[in-house]
Length: 200
Image 1 (cartoon, rainbow, N blue to C red):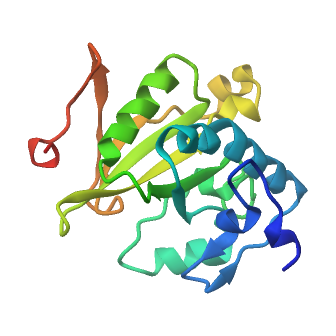
Image 2: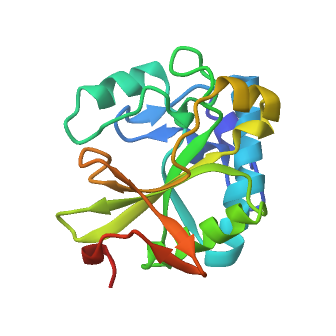
């Protein structure tokens, strides 16, 4: 395992970045299909964002059942039972195609990143399924972004539309989701429906 952790999955990303968990104090094991999804995520989504904004810090990547169970019993987290962090792990969620949480080391304004992601996704230039920017009420700031791979990268569009429930594509999550979610939109190039206290 230690040798495989240092595999480069894109120009600027390494496999170990997707597998480390502070809650487990170790790395999550993945199979060949999950490894393929990680490479897709890294090359089609994350590398594009990194090329625009600089170094990204992944705070959560692949989640297995053990990690989900730990998070479920921790009041600081509110993990979804249909999470894309599953990377197709049937013990977690068989249709979860891949997601990461991240922040950027040189970009304090995460809402600028969120708007950039939304604009490109809506023009079909970034194959994402969902992008959620998380607000921390104690810090009065956005602290990270959750972004998932477009499900039709894995499933046919017909399968995705017929079998997978649609969900809000662009959201603000409050306090890791414990405070709920609010859908946000772009109108004439500007973000709307953002709570006023979150706009600086």
